Every structure is written in C-alpha cells, then in structure tokens.
Image 1 (tube, rainbow, N blue to C red):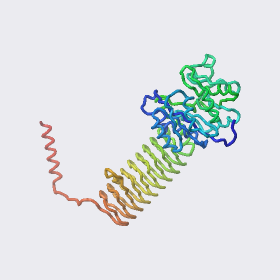
Image 2: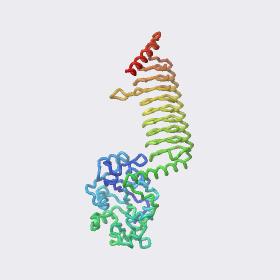
Image 3: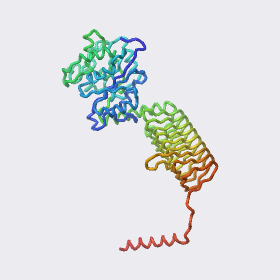
Image 4: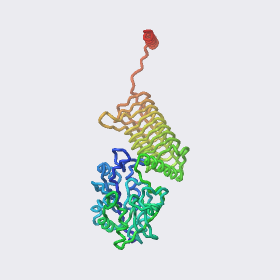
Amino acid sequence: MQSDERPCALVILAAGQGTRMNSDLPKVLHPLGGAPLVVHAMDAGAALAAERTVVVVGHGGALVEKAVRAHDEDAICVTQSEQLGTGHAVLQAAPALDGFEGDVIVLYGDTPFICEDTLARMLAARADHDIVVLGFEAAEPGRYGRLVMEGDRLARIVEAKDATPDELAITLCNSGLMAADATTLIALLAKVGNDNASGEYYLTDVPAIAATKGLTATAVTCDEAETLGINTRAELAGAEALFQRRKRAEVLDGGVTMTAPDTVFFAYDSWIGRDVVIEPHVVFGPGVTVENEATIRAFSHLEGCHLGARTIVGPYARLRPGAELGNDARIGNFVEVKAAEIGEGAKVNHLSYIGDAEIGEGSNIGAGTITCNYDGVFKHRTTVGRDVFIGSNTMLVAPVTVGNGAMTGSGSVITRDVPAGDMALGRAKQVNKTGLGARLMARLRAMKAEKKGQ
C-alpha cells in the first residue's frame, strides 16, 4: 500500500530487437513525431517527477543508451544480455533500484501513447492494492494476455498462448504496464518461473504469485488506443498518423489557423502560439517554437528554431537549427537560415542563405545574398548591424562585419569589414567590347549548324 507523496521510479523496457521492423535500427529508436519511440515512453512519466528512470537496453544497447542520455542525462541504463522475457527484463533493473523506497511503474519503450493521467491513476490505485496492472477492453483480443478479475481483484494474468477457451473469451486485456512497491516487485519477480509455452519469465505472473503471499492486485483501465504498441513498419506508420491527428487537434484548440491541417506535420515538442497562421504543406522538425501571430507560408520546413511574434516565413523557406527570428522579422521564398539571429523587423525576402550570422534590427538582405561561412574546415561568423542594406547578389565572406547603417552594392564580394554608414563595392569594373556579343553569337550558331549537317 502507498501513502501520499510516495516517491516514484520508472522502469522502461527497451531491450527487444523488433525483428518484424526488418531494420538494423533498434525498434525503440524508430522515430515518431521526430523523436525515438523510447523518448515518448520517458516523457509519459515526466509529470510523475520520478526520482529514478531506469531503461533496460539490449539489442543495439549503445545506440539506445545514447538516445536515452541525450533526452535525460540522469537516466540509468542497464543491460539485458539475454532476452528471457519481461519478468527477467525488469529484474535487470534491481541493482539500479537498490536503496529506493517507493513505487515503480513498468513501461515499454515501444508503447508511446500512454497518458500522464493514466499513470497517475495507477499510482492512486496503489492506496488500496499492492499490485496495479493497466488493462483495456480490446476490440479484437487476439494475442493479448487476459486479465482474470474477481470483482475488483485481479486474480491472475493469462497469456493468450497459455489460455483456456473460457479465458480467451475475456475481452479485458493486459497492456503490460504495472505499478508496485519497488522492493515488493523485485521480491516477487525472484519467484517467477519459466514453465510456460515460451520458456520465458513473465512479468504477468506477478499478480498470481502476489496472491499466494497475501497481497492484492487490481486493474486500472484506459482506452485501447493508449496501449498501442509498435512492432512493424505498418504499425509505425499508423502510429504516426494517430500522433499527427492528435497534435493537429491540440494546435487547433490552442487558437491556431491551419487552412489544410492534414498537410501540416508536427514534431512531438512543437510549440505554436495563439493566432498563428500555418498554410498548407508545412513540416515542423523537433525543437520549434512559434510565438503569437506569426505566419508560416506554404511548403516551408522548420527545425530547431524560434520564431518571434508576428514573423512571416516562406513560402518555400527552410529554417535550420539555431535560427532565431526576432519579432516582425521576414523570411521569404527560397531562403535558408541556419545558426543565425535575424533581428527585429529585419528582412531576408528572396533566394538567400544566411548561416552562422547575426542580422541587426531593421536590416534588409537583398535577393541572392549568401554568407560564405565555411572555408572547407572551419565555420566563420558574419555580423550585420542595424538598418543595413545589403544589395542583391552580395557574397559576405566570413568572418566579416558590416556596421550599422552601411550598404553594399549589388553583386559585391565583401571580404573586409564595412564601417558604419559606409557603402561597400566589391566587384570588377565593367568593360564593354563593341560588337563582340553579336560576333560571338554568330560564330556559335554557325558551329551548331555545321555540327547538325555532319
């Protein structure tokens, strides 16, 4: 039994190979909404303020551990070297739970849609029961384990392959999630055997073993869609569609206008402010924040960037990681911005690349401008001050600074700093050769005719 404010830990099972994915990538690293499946499982428990998060890894363990640590550097990864069942997997977490006094919730790295409220209800049910299992009414029970209930008491869980015909008729099924006192759960798992059709150590044997010890178990239920597990590419595609539907509904409810919602794709952490307008065919990668009243025009791609209030982006714009747009900034068609700060009210409207740069407030970057930031080995920074006018087709060869209120002439290659208020011209003097154009064209046409006659 538990009391209020009882500490909580998460154990996330992520050791399986996922052979039905037909992939060299561990199953739990396949992306959903731009984040690995295992990250969704970790985030599901985030609201519980877990004191410890333990992830059980196996196949591709080093890659899984890297992804886990990138999301939560305090997470503990333990290895299940042999895949001997879910009970055996949870038991691998025992050393990481040593000294922990509180409840543990067992989650699965390939089950991304569990809601925070569901986990909270599982913990609340611990007030009256020693073991809490998450169940659901299955439309097609099929291969799922069945929850055998006696009133509100869970008598046992029966795997489909081991069930009798009467037990197979039960539609209340096991999601696999379980909550219990950490010490109690580890002790019960030590009693689990592998005398079953698969020769594995089942976590599902715990409720029946608990009953022999005078402990009680129950089931909390949720919608079947929450328990969706990912085992194949088709299921992953279905999960992505479900994720996008939910995210679009969330964004619309938040006061955003989307003229063609089904064509807009979000990441798991997309944050969109009120009165934002998103036109068709926009893709959000991870790490995008859009402030109120911004407009994102069609066919734009955004990732790892921040858009200030009332910004306008696109159409056909690409914002890469590190792009920071100030309020009222404008990024136009076929413009790419990477690791650059675009100041308040600044404009980059046409056919430009701005990378590793700072563009000051109110500056105007002409069409075809490029910050030449890479010398083949190192990246260099371009700084453009306030109220600067950069002429069309200017090459800014970094490192270079253009001072406040300065200008560059169209077609210039700027290799030296431009002082504030100056006009910089960096192009060769034009020379006109009288009649040469006509003579050269005539010669070329004659050569073409001669070649055709051969």
